[in-house]
Length: 277
Ligand code: F3S
Image 1 (cartoon, rainbow, N blue to C red):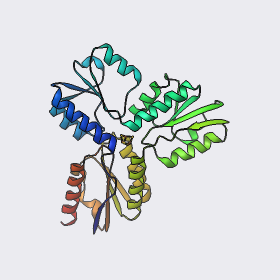
Image 2: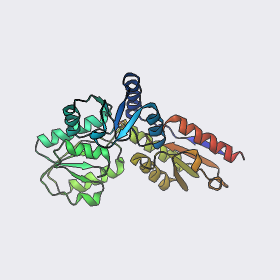
Image 3: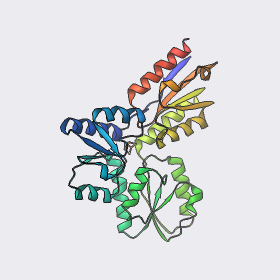
Image 4: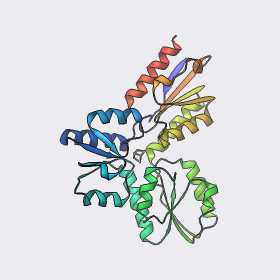
């Protein structure tokens, strides 16, 4: 019986940086507000609530510094925070910022901006703001058919799958004469997805750890399901079931970008205890 943790599992650079920024700000300010959960991981959010980082959904709830999480926000949110005389603590991931810059550039250059991503994801909602809410959001080769313009500029939600992005761009290229594409998919996601796929191929079961509300974890789970006999998406070790491991030889573990290493370790140990009886 072998238990293996995939390379690049867990916190990415942007999330780690956001957590460090939050830690520093918590030392400096008595009350701190996070505009939306700091990361898509309920356990971490709870831990930080206890430390004094209050999650807010509207700026009306804030009367102190406001932390912008790694997903970023539309420009209007910065303006609104300033108008209220509050301090901005910006933990937007630099790679997300880069995608925002490209979205604005394409908009300024007069392209019909297309965002490849999930409509509901906060990062995509922020990107939209940089195109003055004129961009269209697509997420598959099929939805690419809805884009009708002669000059199209594309940016991508950083956590999307490269394969699907490539297929969608291929679809756009069939019909659009002037197509400008910024591949803003983050390296960390690519590496994590590749490592998970490789491990899934040689595993009988894959355990994918991360928030149920985390888009990148759900994507990892899909990849693992396609490439391994069995895959399960859990948030913590409590969800593990003994019977999943009956007659299993190779167990693989991976985790989304918002999963701290202490949760990965706890899952690893719990699996080891289950298989060792
Ligand atoms: Fe940033 Fe990439 Fe993570 S864009 S938040 S380092 S997944």
